[in-house]
Image (cartoon, rainbow, N blue to C red; front, side, top):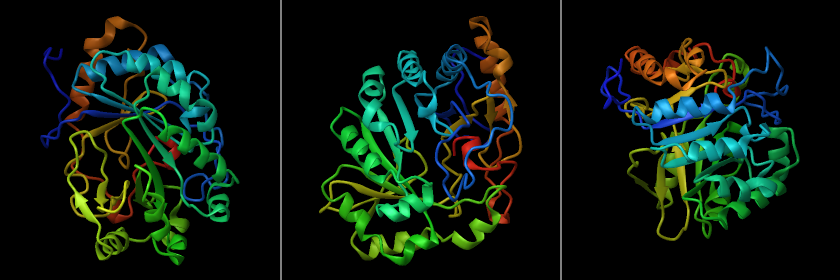
Amino acid sequence: MTHPGAVATDAFGRRFSYLRLSVTEVCNFRCTYCLPDGYRKTGSMDFLAADEIERLVRAFTGLGIRKVRLTGGEPTVRKDLTQLIARISATPGVEKVALTTNGWNLPRRIDEWVGAGLTNLNVSIDSLDREAFHRITGHDRLADVLAGLECALALPLKTVKVNAVLLRDGLEEDFSSWTEFVRERPVSVRFIELMRTGDNKTFFEAQHVSGRILRQWLEDNGWTAKARGEDDGPATEFTHPGYAGRIGLIAPYGPGFCDGCNRLRVTARGQLRLCLFGQGGRDLRDLLGSDDSTQVLKSRIVEALTFKPAAHNLHTANPGDIRNLAQTGG
């Protein structure tokens, strides 16, 4: 059994305050770097139910988790998403409830999500060019997504961020359209280095570029890196005195990327992933059937963390057993 004051730590002394919880593997976009052929059902759709998610979050908060991010697939395809947000927000110990979404449902639903307790929002927008957005995602929905983002900016959210995958095709122009985008908007736009997965080898080899390109461009144009907060994700964010927003870089191929890891991941089927790009994980679902299993569940999580690796093996072209990012929520 765990000690009442136990916290989520691993063998390398890293403490975990941030849980990324996938609530579905389904996605309605066909992004070139993730699901170019669209989502294809690979098994039963028995994703974690609301009661199971509530028990899971309660156990993690008992181990020091303070921030919970709902991911997918695309989490907004779940009809009970508002209920999930409300339940997690009401869990003692939870200070932030975040959502990562492709934005397709933002204009219609963001008000009710914030009303239910959503505090932080990330929207995936891989290009500000309509044709490029359509080509990357398979949907001509850029105007709708941007409209939803503007709705979100008018609401009392702690942070609104934009995620964009850094692709070689996108380097035909410099990053000035994005810096102009954040000139008057208090938004953080974070570029994510394309990561190798089991399904995207050919695409990765054609499209991967180092985050050093963005870093150098920002530094050359007067942007300065700022320190990370305790429960921030892995982005290095850059600020400029003339801009309301920030530009960020998530560079998993950079040195020391895993040293400050502060996040744990649970899949939509209840498996604790010890590393996004690792092999397998530890099943938790068999302990989510009743409230009586909380202490045993916490003990299993603490024991599993002793096997968390020091770092991923992406540098050796080994993505573990992850087929695509929709599989575990990225």
